[in-house]
Length: 193
Image (cartoon, rainbow, N blue to C red; front, side, top):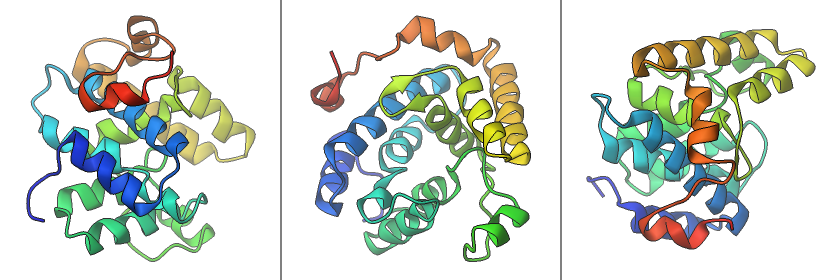
C-alpha cells in the first residue's frame, strides 16, 4: 500500500489488527481533535487523519509504552507510507528523548515528533483521555505526578508551540468541541452520546 488509507480504511486496519472498540473510539476522538488543530494550517490533512486514526494500532498487541514501537512495526508490515509509520512511532507524549529510550529499554531511534503532522497527532493524543477531550494540563500533571518532569515539560512546550502556530490557546478546543466531540463521516459510528 503506497497511498494513505482513508478514514474507513484506517478503521478497517484497526479492526483487523485486533484493536478493541475502546481503542478505536479513542483513535476517532484523537482524529477529530487533530483535524481541529490542523484546520487552517499548511499541513497534509490526509496524513494527519491517517496518523491520528492509526497512532494506537500497536494497542492491539500491547498497552505499555512499547505500543508505539509495536504499532510502527505493524504499520511497516502493512506497507503503510513512512510518514504514517513515523507518526505512530513518535506520538507518545510529546516524544521520548534518549534518556527515556534507555529507561524504557526501547530500540534506539528518534522518538521526538519533528514534522507539523507528527506534532499535531502527538498533541491531539495528549488532549484526549480515553474518549474525552481534556486540557493539555491533564497530561502534564499526570506525568509530573509520576516524576517525569522532562516529559511534562515537552508536552507544555509542544502545547505552546502549536498554540502559537494556530494563533490561539489550543485548550479552548475543550469548550469549542465539547468534552465528547461530534464526529463526522465513518467516524460517527464511534461517537459517544
